[in-house]
Amino acid sequence: MTYRKEYVLGILSLMPLLAAGTYKGLGWLVTIIVVYVGIPVLIWGLVVDRLVFFVIWIIRHFRESSGHQYYFERPVGPPGFSRRILRDFRVLLFVFVLSAIIVPHVTEVIPANIAIVSNAFVYVAIFILAVPSYIHVLFWVLEDSGLRCHNPKRVTVTAPGAWMSNWLASVGSLGAFLTFAVSLGGSLDKAFSLTTTLLASLLHSCILAPTLIYRRVEPGILAKVRESKTAMAMARLFAPPPSPSVPQSYPPSSPAPLVHPPPNT
Image (cartoon, rainbow, N blue to C red; front, side, top):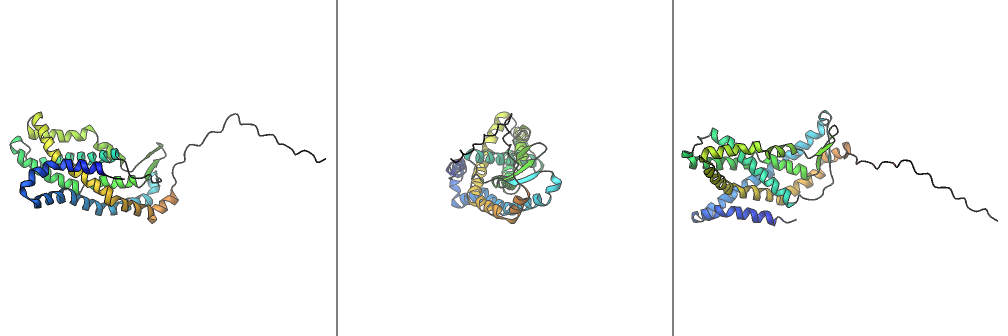
C-alpha cells in the first residue's frame, strides 16, 4: 500500500512554512522538519512499542474482573486512506484543544499579546503532539492489530479506546479552542484568521508524522504483537464471539426414504 496522498497533502501543507523560512537558510528548514515531524515520530515509536505489550498484559491478567472478552481478529490489512486521514484530524483536534486549555495558564490571552500567545500556542502544541498524542498511536496500533473487546451484556464488539476518539470528535471539545481563538482575536474575523495561521503551522505535522508511523514503525510492532507469547495465550483463553447459527427449518424435513437393493434372482 502506498501513502502518496498523505505525503502530497503533508508537503502542500508544509509549503507556507517553507516559503516563510527560505530566507533563513537550509538549517532553519531542517530544524522545522526535525522538530515538527522527526521528534514526534521518534517518541511515538519508542513509547508505543512498549505500551502495546503492557496493555495486552493488563488485559490478560485482569480479564476476569473486567467482564469483557478480548480476542484478536484475523488481520485484514492496513486501514484505508479515509480512515487514516480521519485519525490525522483527530490528532490535530486533540493538539488544538489541549493547547487552547493550557496556554491561558501560561500567558494572558488578549488581543494585545497576539504574537506572544501565538508563539506560545505553537510551542505547547509541538510538545503535545510529541508526548501526549502517543495515546492515539497506541489505540491505532491496538485496533490495527485486530484486538477487539466483546461486551456480552451489551452484545457489542469495539476496538479498545474507541470511546476516546468519539469524545474528541464532539462539539464540546472543539468549543474550547473556539473560545480561545475569539478571546485572542477579539472578533470572529480575526479569530478565523488566527485559526488559519495556526492550522498552517501544525497541519503538516499531524499528517506527515502519522504517515511515517504507518509506513515505518507500525508494521514491525504489529508483527511482534501477533507473534508474542501474550497474544498467543489470549488466543487460547478467548475465542471470537460466535456468529449467529442458521436456524433449523420448521417443520423439520422428513428423512429420505431408504432404497433397498433388488433381491437376487
